[in-house]
Image 1 (cartoon, rainbow, N blue to C red):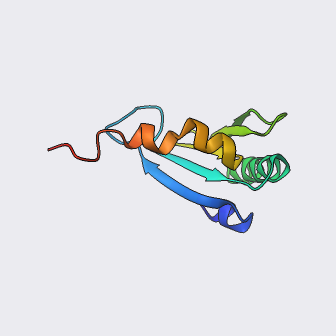
Image 2: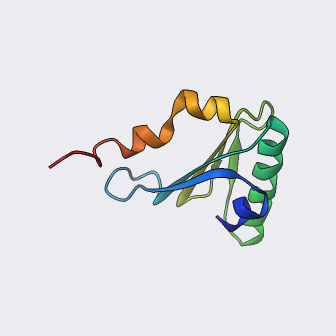
Length: 101
């Protein structure tokens, strides 16, 4: 979260996945203003994760419309705003939290 804040990511959302999925403990979704900013944020985040002694795999970097960073217990999705609104991951992963009784 600090890395995204440092890189001026927009609309950063952290989604707890415990009880919803076993792929990770958290999913973080954020936007960059352009493909160039998304790519830069992804590269810097991966470097910071690796420096902390953890693994980080990146997918989607060449186009940088949607970049996924798998940091083991945290999955980070970085989007250009138009692509983020199209896929709307926050709504998909929050499904079932609202209005269920």
